Image (cartoon, rainbow over all chains, first blue to last red; front, side):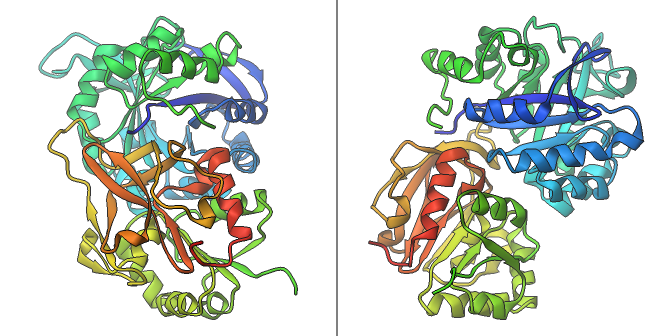
Length: 259
Length: 211
């Protein structure tokens, strides 16, 4: 039986691990390579690096981080943030990333998804979606809207519609990131996650809002997510990856326990 | 005798660098090559791969690597297939209705589930059930988990060639197959953490043969 995955998300700014609250205020909290290795040794299933470097001249640092991490961890890891072309994607894959997360650039130019799927494979193409709750309307039948640029720019696109479009264009997995829940540690957006997970036939990774083990349990059961993304709750040492997995295992969730 | 020449077959199907890095980690120095002659003359060959079987088979043929792999296999030297490498080693795949290398009798078909909640591709960590012992599986036990990414799965004609199976939805598929000097895993042992590396490390000593 397939295990539910626990994925740690590391926001990296200028080569340093950063953590944001509601995608606005960020603080640097350490060395991403050391964290990646620590989580790997503690039974992490997968890793996501998100490049939140603002200036384009410092973007090259990410390639170095990826290449260093690839020599230390032997689980899948993906990279996202600022990927606009196949060239960007290939540089990161060559450095050692497994999968590529596209986000804002794909909303602006959806062909980016099919180009990635074609060039690096559907299974390596992850569509990451930043989503806010809005009033249900003919424009937003699901009651959720896609935003870009770290949650600052509403795009007038219905979230569910975009998820289905992304699947059709060749995304192999979806990250459902709730901007409302991001960094709050108050729990994932269960309704949103479930709605998308039930509508698509590709795996869904829930993101934003994890603060305690109960949140993971809820999103992996009621929320129907295939994987749960964690950040602050492990970065600041309040919980460990192995501790979370043991807790979920005791609650009857199938997770990978041997590593 | 010098160090054995280990070659990773490069046919533009996925991240051969990941496999090379994992090899290095377990003390296997492997060269990446797209040259048929280099493949045939190697002591050991790793045949990895992800992505589309159709373009993979086309690329193998256009580089003459299909014949090289067959020749290498028939020389009786250790050959390790990973993921797409397992699938292409069989006779046929439903993916694009494509004929493959035919090293072993078997074929691949797509996962089809009546329940929409079972996602395709099969992505993530799943358990291996070991059915027969094999030198490559010396340190592996049933219940160990490995990382899978695939939409097609293998069905073997001869159950003697099935060393491990994995369950996904209501389908039980062959996740480890082998015959004589060929051994292959559907999962990515280079991305399966320390347990995957433990399996890969056996390749250093394995000379081919199933016992």
